[in-house]
Image (cartoon, rainbow, N blue to C red; front, side, top):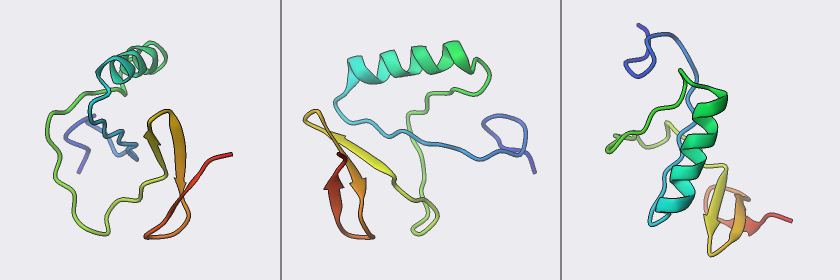
Length: 76
């Protein structure tokens, strides 16, 4: 069955943002300019434990990467 979000089989990259209004708005605009049919904003998302994998975390201007299932390290 095709994705309900994009109407075709696809992989999805989800960007979850908390208190980053200006940044996330600019990111959405930039991505939409490059990928006009593949960017969509959602207000709510249901995640099944074990079905997703975080890669990066941005906090206070520092980018963190997952070291393992429980620890994050600053990206150098």
